[in-house]
Image (cartoon, rainbow, N blue to C red; front, side):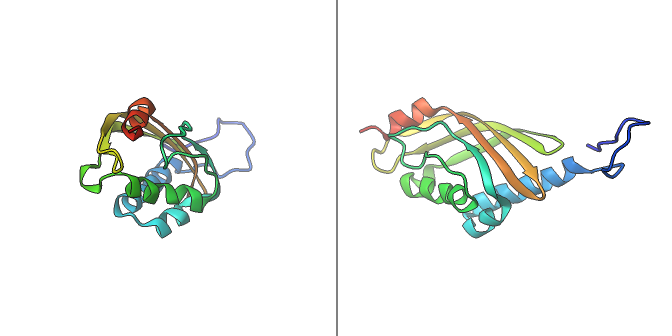
Length: 152
């Protein structure tokens, strides 16, 4: 997407800003780093302060409030520590980009290590990329199924 100011509107911004391409590239880097378990790269890709949203759930050890790049990047490792790696699955069915925003929709599943119980369900992930870094990470998932899988 290229953003062009309306004709006759004064603007201090450049005439064209290729934000969608930049957003898509950062999100693809983020997904590759997440898949590889590259926490250091995820810290680089997250902004210093992140608008993090993932519904708190006291029985799910990897779900908690986060706001710094290091805290946000650590979530992937915490998830891996509490789930069976071989059973973890995520598929992205939809990848939409509009300016600085990206929305990914798909399906995820896994097994909680401590209980041996599976979970699965759809997800939607809303990311915002500004200045080449992820400033928003809002994840919507089947938190009830995950909580049930974490409960002995």
